[in-house]
Length: 112
Image 1 (spheres, helix red, strand yellow):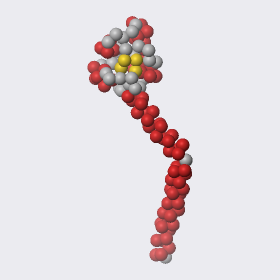
Image 2: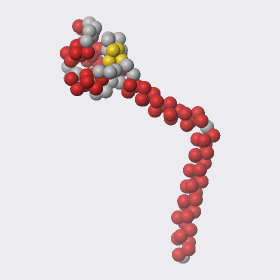
Image 3: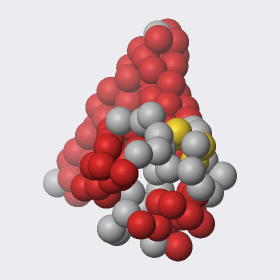
Image 4: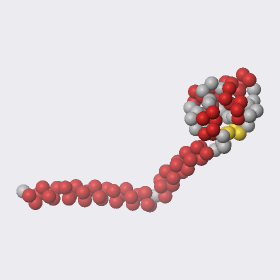
């Protein structure tokens, strides 16, 4: 009885090990799957560092800025449509919900 209880966990580990090895083999043999994940990560990184023109960008693009969600992005677009183009970065402070900290986080990414 003692030997049988010892064999069950080992056989389970071997079974799981075979499944893992098979999965790793599929990934190694299919560079498209491996590259898809790497591509998705680089796309996120590019969105987090891409420059954004606040005078032409849609709300969805503005929402990619740090600390700006879709609601604040729509507020930027609404303000721009009502009052015209932003001339300086500081003009964004007139938009409700945009403060100095948000502006500072995005200063290097915002274009006019």
